[in-house]
Image (cartoon, rainbow, N blue to C red):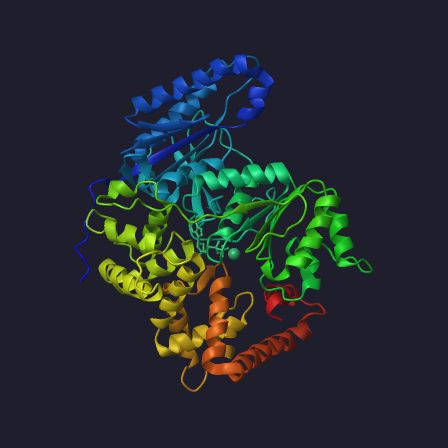
Amino acid sequence: MQSPISYDSLIETLTFLSTDIEGSTAMLRRLGDVAFAPVLAEHHRIIRESIEAHGGREEGTLGDSFFATFTSPRAAVACGIDIQRTLDDFAWPGDEQLRVRMGIHTGEASEETTGLVGYQVHRAARIAAVGHGGQILLSSATAGLVEDSLSGDSTLRSLGSHRLKDLGRSETLFQLLAPGLQADFPPLRSLDNPELPNNLPASLGTFIGRVSELQEVLVLIRECRLVTLTGAGGSGKTRLALQAAAEFLDGSGDGVWLVELAPVSDPDRTADAIIEALQIRHEPGLAPVDNLLRVLRDQRSLIILDNCEHLIDSVAKLVELLTRTCPKVHLIVTSREPLGVDGEDVYRVRSLSLPAGNVEAVTDVAGSDSVELFVTRTRQHDKSFELSDSNVSLVASICRRLDGIPLAIELAAARLSSMSVEDLHERLDQRFSLLSGGSRNALPRQQTLGAMVAWSYDLLNEFEREVFRRLTVFVNGFDLRAAEAVCTNESIESYELDDIIGSLVAKSLVVAERGDTFLRYRLLDTIRQFAADRLLEVEGEFGMGEARQGHAEYFLGLCEAAEPFLEGGSDQAQWLNRLEQEWDNL
Ligand SMILES: Nc1ncnc2c1ncn2[C@@H]1O[C@H](COP(=O)(O)OP(=O)(O)O)[C@@H](O)[C@H]1O
Ligand SMILES: [Mg+2]
C-alpha cells in the first residue's frame, strides 16, 4: 500500500522575480572598479527598496543579480515595473545607463535549511537570461495569473514559445508593457535566436544540480580547448556536456554544435559526421577532413563529440588536427575512456551527490542532487508524489543503493507509477543483495547500472520485452512507422505497438522526443547495447537478422518512395528533410 501522501507544509506556491544587469562586465571595464562600486550600490538600493515596498522577500544576490519571492504575482509584476522606471529615471554617472533584464515566474518551491529549492526556482533566472536590459518577461504561469488583474495601463505581449538554456521544455513568454517602459526590443536571446547558432536538442529532461561541476567544466573549456568527460555509461556525461555547451553559447562566436558519434560505426566517417552536424557545405574534390579544417580554421565554435569510445583512434587523430589547425575551436568529448592526446584535459564525471547516511526528515536531504533527480523524475510519472518525512529515508536509501548514477535513478523513479516507495525499496534491496552475494556493500558502478537496467527489463511483459529488444537496430532514433516495420509480427499487431512503446517510455527505457511537428523515439546508448545483448541471447543471430531485415526493407522502401521527388518539385525539400533525419539509419 502506498503511504498516504503528505503535502509537506514546507512547499508553497510563490512568484519569483529574477533580475540581472545587462553588460555589467563591460560597464565595469569602462568605469573601472572605483567608479563602478557606487553604481552597483545604487542599483542594489533601488532594487531592495522596491522589493520591500511591494511586500517581497529578498532571497539572495549573486554578483549583479537579485532574486526575490512574492506571495502575490501582481505584487511581483508591480515591483518589476517600479524598478525599471526608477532605474530609468536615475542619473547614472557619465553617459551610462544601467539596464536590467527581468524574469518573473510562478511555481512551487520548498523552503529548506539551505534556502529555497526546486526546479521552478531557477526558471525565473533562465527566463531573465533570454531578455534584454529594460525588458520584463513573464512565464505563461505568471501571465495566466495576472492578465485579468493588471492595472489599466499595463498589458502583456505574447512573444511565442522559446527554448531556454536549461534545455528543459520550451516556455511561452510574455513581455510586460507599461507606460514609461521601453516597448520594442531585439529578438529574445533564446536557443531559437538565429544569432545563437546551435543544434542542441530541443527538450531534454530538466538539468538537475551539478552546480560546481558545470562551473568547473566551463572554466576548463575556456582555458584548455579540449575537455574529455569520462565516466561509465549513464553517469551523465552527455547531459553535462550539453548543459555546459548551452551556457557557453552567448552569441559572440560561430555557434555550438553537437555531433553524435554513437551511430557512426565506420571510423573513416568521423569527419563526415562532424560536417553533417555543422551543416558545412560539401566541396567536391576536397577530402572531408580538409574541407572541415578549411571551414573551421577561422571559426570560433564549440563542438561536442558525443560517445567516442568506439572510435577512439580516429577521433584522437582528428581532434589533434583540429586543435592544431583551428585555434579558436573548442571541443568537448564524451567517452568512457580518455583520448590520450596532447592538450587533453580529462574530467571525470562523478555520481550525483548522495544524501547522508542517516536521514529522518526532508530537511536532511537538502542539496542532494540524486534525491532531487529522483523526485523530479517521479513527479513526471506521478504528479501527486511528494517527498515527505515519512518516505524520505526510503528515497535516500534508494539513491544511495543506486550510487547516484543518473540513469539508474531515472529507471527506478519510473517504477513508482506502478509500485510504492516501500515496494521499490524492498525489491531493489533483494535484487542487489543477491548480486553482491548477500553483502550490503555497494556494487561496482557499472554493475549497479547493469542491474538496474536488467531489473527494469525483467519487469516488462513478454510483448514489451520483444519490442524493446528489436528497437536496438535503430542507431539513431525512429518513428512509429519505422518501429512497426521492425517490431510487428504474428503476436504483435501494429495497433498495439503505439501502447507498447508508450509503456516503454513511461518506464524510461525509451526516450520520446517531441518537436512541433514530429514525435521520435530513441534508446540511450547504454540501454541500446543492453537491448542488443538480450536480442542475441533470446532470439540469436536469426532474430537479430530478422530485425535488421525489417529495418533494411523499411528504409529501402523509404528511399524508393523519395526518389521521384528528389529531382525537384514542390515536395523536394520535405523529402530531403525526411531522408536527412534518417541518415544514420540508412
Ligand atoms: N544533472 C542531470 N540532471 C538531470 N538529468 C540527468 C543529469 N545527468 C544525467 N541525467 C539523465 O540521466 C540519463 C543518463 O545521462 P547521460 O548524460 O545520457 O549519461 P552518459 O552520457 O554518461 O551515458 C539521461 O536520461 C540524462 O538526461
Ligand atoms: Mg552519453
